[in-house]
Structure formats: C-alpha cells, structure tokens
Length: 135
Image (cartoon, rainbow, N blue to C red; front, side, top):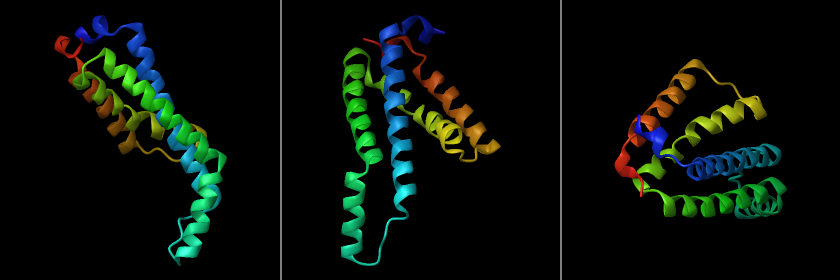
C-alpha cells in the first residue's frame, strides 16, 4: 500500500489538525444553536435579534476561529501535497463529526451510519492510495 510510505508525519499532523478544527467547529455550532433554539422565521426583527445572539455566542465565535485555523491548515496542507490527495482527506470529517456528536453531545449513531462511516474511510484510503498524488 503506497499511502503508508508516502505520508510524512507532517502531512499526517496537518490532516489530523484539519479534521480536529472542522469537527470542533461543527460541535460548537451545534451547541450554540441548541442553546439559542431553532432559527426563527417570524419576522425580520426576530431574525435580526437571533443573528445578534449568534454573533455574540462564545460557541459560534469559537467555531469561527476553528474554521479560520482549519483554513490555514488547509492552505499549508495543499502546499505540501496534491489537491487530489488532500481533498478526499476532508471527507473523513463525515466520520469524525458524527462520532464526536455521539461522544460529546450524546447524539444517537445507528448501524447504517456506522456502515456509511466505514465505507467513507475505506473510500478515502482507496482514492488516496496512489503514489502520483504527492509532490
């Protein structure tokens, strides 16, 4: 398997950080909207008030900061490896976010989701296992 010998420790760390920042951001956003309730649709005044609450919520602010860190991590990663390798790695967030939601937010994770997560992970390994995807 080519992927093992081609991944440098630095690339592995960058992928892990990218997934960590993205997963943290999504959990923070979920916590924020859980605290504030559903997005209102009554009138513009209520929507504006809700948006102000979102903008000043520490979880939203933390999530935005995590996404900014994810952006810089992403830029660093794609400066080191081909986009055709790096981008499929972002699909691993489809595994990390539901797993983190289950662990930290006690959201249910059903067997079809677990099968899907396994298929995504296998798919990322298969699509990324090519020696031509690294600079």
